[in-house]
Amino acid sequence: MPTVTVGEKTLNCDRGANLRRVLLDNNIDLYNGKAQFINCRGLGSCGTCAVEIEGEVSEANWKEQGRLSLPPHSPTRGLRLACQTKVLGNIKVRKYDGFWGQGQERVW
Ligand code: FES
Image 1 (cartoon, helix red, strand yellow):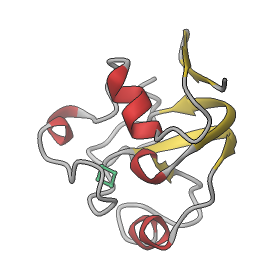
Image 2 (cartoon, rainbow, N blue to C red):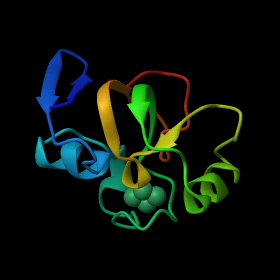
Image 3 (cartoon, rainbow, N blue to C red):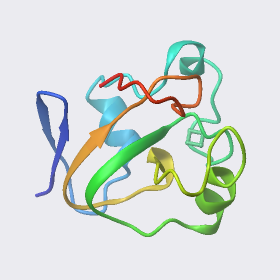
């Protein structure tokens, strides 16, 4: 069973679990500020669930690649959309500031 490390917390999930669901089900604040209310609920279109991931996860699909190639995101930053990502092994997840999580300051 893969583990998802978020700051000091370690969560367990099934292999293949949707990362957005894992984080929200464990009361992790995936969205910054008002993005908590204004987001696409996992459709892969808003870009506000962007996180940095270390570890084994699914490849980015076309939807995710498309959204992350549009400002304020950048395809070279290396962020991932939690809503489009499946957890495949033990991972560490970090969230940055900004409405879309596009900032440079770590939130968690
Ligand atoms: S929740 Fe909107 S892109 Fe992930």
